Length: 145
Image (cartoon, rainbow, N blue to C red; front, side):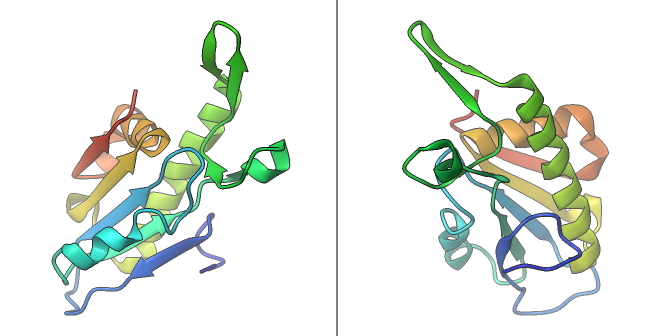
């Protein structure tokens, strides 16, 4: 789904019972996945949650990889994997902007906003916790660095 008010493509499950300030859960996927990777979790979560799953900004197919998306570029070297600091900062800034826009669109307060991030998405959630902790009430960070 696309919405001009949100800086990223996303999919969502709107809350089944509307409240004035619904709790918001933002899902941030890992390297090589998409906005569809984590949205299935919404079926297992309370129906009053507004669940929004963002697509990371970097299309890996453009880099000659099999596909999917990433929050930042990885650098594959003989001695291991490194990351591109500039693209990591850009991805983190975009993730923060997405959360703010999703809050506004869903009429959700920061006190009722949570993030679940997996892998690179967990790294984005950690970045939000470090750079703008007042933006969210909490984060679940799964398999991040």
